[in-house]
Image 1 (spheres, one colour):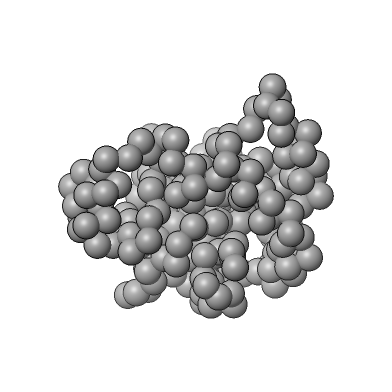
Image 2 (cartoon, rainbow, N blue to C red):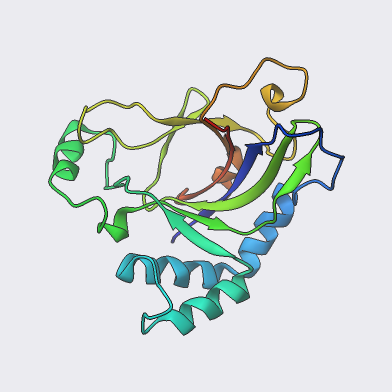
Length: 210
């Protein structure tokens, strides 16, 4: 059984103070939406694993577009991280080193972009929530979700903070707290535990301008 989680992102906006706006959908609302459209989410994952990103010239484009519409998803995005079984072992890292990371579609994580960007005066940022898919069960320990061991350095050097809920912003996002570092922050909600195996998680990220 495959699983999806939620992603909350915030993009720093420094041109002017932002007016208070509506909050992103709650964790419960997004989980309910996922459950109602799980078949479409599964089908989108299967299409990506078989073909990668599907452009308008692809024979499966119409099917792909229809699934996105029914699932309420704007687009999918992926990176070149390779998630193999036992992704944290040195043996797996060595195996991943011999693979083409850009065409290993069945081993990529996916972000299902769903919500509109919402300006938040509390964090002086644009905030949104997405769904996040991981093809294997990720490690969650010390309040962090860990990405696979690097096939190049052999280290565990990428992780995301874990929260019980993303209905509230992380404390260091809130205006008046310590300055946020440049780059990306990510936080995983423990709603990952709602599904088994736990391949869909809730995350929150914030991307700052360079």
